[in-house]
Image 1 (cartoon, rainbow, N blue to C red):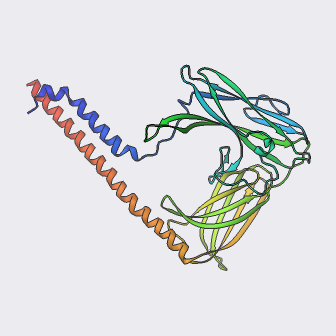
Image 2 (image 1 turned 30 degrees about the vertical axis):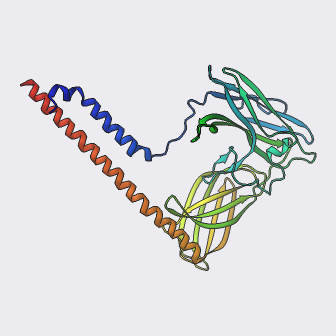
Image 3 (image 1 turned 180 degrees about the horizontal axis):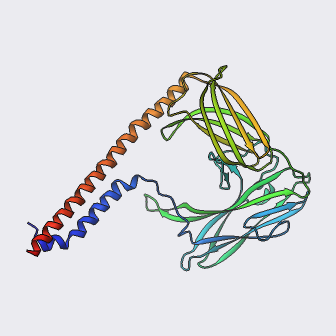
Length: 353
């Protein structure tokens, strides 16, 4: 049997062991987000002709038809010992489901309503480039933008997007490329002397979806005008077709939309999917003095409702087990710590006597 001195000598071992069990069994279920620390690089804009303000932290250009404007970024490798590789590319801005401007590469196809997107202004050159920098070195990358001969209408919005590549071992011992850290410099282009334009909004699609165990309606709101606008308040209401009673209502504030982009607005349906039938959605968007009233009828088919219900059931049966598992680990850990604490007090008491 372990004597008192040996128990006290190893008490921290047991505490650390229990903490590690909790971290690996309980803590690992929580999502881990990559931080900027450790990225080992910086990017800085080098402004050229057309830049409206050299004090800005992004590119803001007033342009003339047919003229060329350089977009130059300096990429610096801050690592004193490691050679780093990067991709540098031009990206067209989009809108996220949360109503934010997205300056990272989109997985969707380019918006067909846009007359001009940022990458197209440099289509005579590679809009995605790879560079390799020696330790503690830097390099300039320039994209030459050529404006169309016709006057530019509205705003062209995008970014110079820089992504660091890191090598990681594969299951077969080979080296693979894994993108891990990235930064973006926004780019905004307007025509000099241009008058203001208004957004053009349309409710283009409505579909049900189960996201993370929550039933929602996704309302696709399309901005077909080359106009950036924000401070948008949304008020969405769902009705049975032909009825006046509101089934679901949701409000949100401070949304933004990029030019020529789609906002997939998620409307919570109180934890359950809509029954098969005909419905109507009305959304009011307010931004300053501008008000947009959109509405659209839609139908939930039996097959669609059944598919959504299956997704919800799968999520609901999965997460309670996970929750009870975490609670069980918590109770075991707490009980073990209390037991150790009582043992330590008992042993210390014996040592005194």
